[in-house]
Length: 497
Image (cartoon, rainbow, N blue to C red):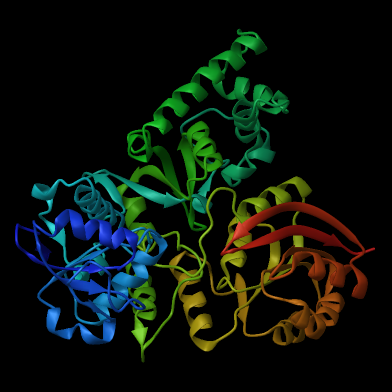
């Protein structure tokens, strides 16, 4: 590990010659040796004698530490990357990007706040920038011993009890709630939404199922609900202490050969964390299950694909639900209720399975993999454009125990239509603007026999009206509007007829 420290009279450059940078200059000019400012626009500062340099003329100052002084924390990542590209290793900045491992980002942010709060004696053990970028692949593990591993697990891999569960009597549990994603486990989600939002909600399902599971028939319904509210309050109090506190309330899980986990215990916690917006949750599993999940040979293959090749880096579209790959930078990030949540709830509210499903998205087959886990279609086709993207999509499917014949990964809509002819359900996820709909809507209209699940791309109203006007999808149901990747997206379902 490469660390540095900022001691009295250390040579320093201040990045940013605006009001913030000037304020910092006056605070530290008698403590450190200020060699100058770096700024893309400013060339001199009234009343300040030190020089202002641009990025192209600072090679002689590589020995300096650079303190990033811009108000917009979103710029710090880009600035640090630019400085690193110019040969600087000693950079103090706000590590707000998810490009850095969580523990190193927290360490750097702590240092930055020590600096702002004038705790200059604490500016030691600062990670060099190269070290900030290197990932320790054990960081996803919270704790472990010979028998058990407690680790962060992507929420899409967490399913309710299955019918082969050995640890609890669930004869009275309706099959409707067995082996389903937790967001579709309505007894818990309905109850917590009722508690969280203080609005009328359907808690009858929870009372019916919960009393059977807990064998609580001797208590009244009101007493049973009060006991559940006590559980909810305990979870709220723990959550208020921060995510770290949740690490000591892990969810117990068991590996399912289809490539996900069934909960042994912790349905309340899992539903609660999901509704609170956690994309990964602390789970406890047997070490043998962890080693199966790791799938080391396939992991090495995916890791190789994610490396830079010829200057071009292939990025996963979304976080990969794998013990060590969740820390990788991805193209798209969602927080809170995701499009997958909305899709999953809609699928289970439909209450039926489908013959064939077509995914057209920029998500490397992400939804196809979830269709497979949910057993929602006999035939699944995912359109993935680009040779490298297809190669990565297939490697990720193998990593996550999706059989070769479970999902067809094809390179274009035309190829999908040629191979399968028709599909009962289509999923169009953020890929077609009006111009692209003009080219592809007729094809979709002809190959989809029933339903189109849709996420807008650029102009939701115009795209929606175009589909309604120029296809046989004459019925539309709005499901949600979300802010995704810097734009508002509408999510809904079109039905033919």
